[in-house]
Length: 141
Length: 415
Image (cartoon, rainbow over all chains, first blue to last red; front, side, top):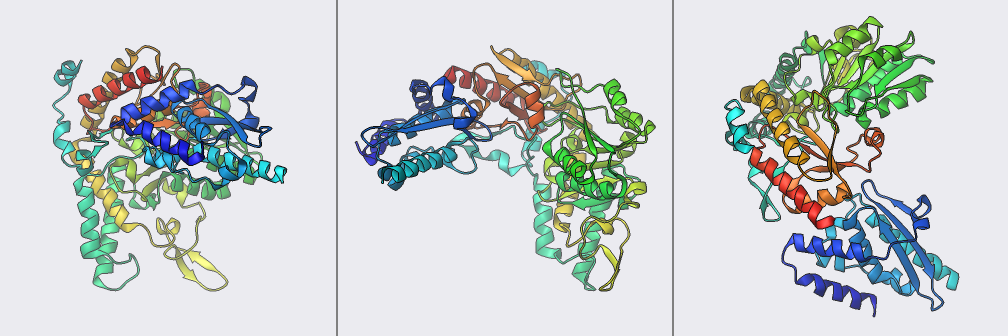
């Protein structure tokens, strides 16, 4: 599936919730289901420092030339959004990641979580995911 | 509990005062706003809003400069605000009240001006472990600049400081102690009068961060015998961008100006400048005179509400909240000093403070989460942060119930 196909799926999934609490419960459940990052990766080397919650991120290039992300957070809501970002961007080609416009966050009403005023590390995580894509892109050329 | 509180409290009518604060009528996410982030900033009563509006509509002109009528009125309002503050904190002289941009600006002014005049290489500054970054970092910067030593007065597990420890920390080279009146994270009310008495025996000046302390009961700088006391207007129902640095005349008169500019000078030639008298020596540039008038209106308003009654009522809210929160499984209150202001920090086992804060927000409850600009304080407890509810006299027991219910909900959702 393309990045936008996945984003549309997520928008549909969240469309059924008509209140904030259900949306956040869904996010929390997604955070719980996220495959934990290797414990060896929960270190400063992979840490993206937010003021309030921490995010750890790693990436590798698959033999098929797609980027596989793994990530984790110490806060469960942050982890839920991390899980969504991974679902959208992991397994995609570097160029597609670099071209992607992440509109789903806004459409499911979680824009505040990715705004610079939220010091939860998520914005820095998206930036870091793009950096990985850029580095892999350069490597492949 | 609720009824117990209603019966035990002196007849303090929070509901009536709520009507003075337009913002308290609003909703967030379709729920009534429960504003429990008063430690970060307080809401503004109509009296303050109307003062500011009237000033801009009818008086506005730059102070101390013009020969014209408006400038004279503006200056008069500004100086009247200074006298209002002087009376409010019981300073001996109006010129001991300096208007600043806020508590942070006041502390930085002392760190620079006092530091330049009195701190030399090898001297020592003491800070407590519970300081807000704004009463820690300026002293670190001063020490670095001067080659002075920073010594730390640690607190115990309950969040209390021991005077014995302070006595042991002070030496011949100690020049100043920087201490908060009320901890913004732990709620601890420090015994400032006892602390200054001890410090003064050793010839140590005391800088009190009054950011939280100013709204906790009556502040009397002479009774506290503080050498410096800094606070922000916005934390005592006044506007943002205005604050006060109180300093004893004996210090202020010996300190060099910090910032240069207009209004702080007596004569200026291209080679040399002589400085204006107190307090103008420390008020370079156009002051926030409308903010000062707004702050004076806030102090008058708070006095009319009744400072002691409001503080007593807030204390009852604190006790009620403490009791209710403690009943939640796995919840731990951080900061259990005997003497506390209406600030309550807590963590829930297995629930990140950020998650709690986000869920509370969606339920209309505004709290602060994180380290509250007191990283060393939360580090002391080995925590990633806390959730902090901080009360004002316009909060109600029903709002405490909303908080408690939201905290329970957050726990159910995330565990």
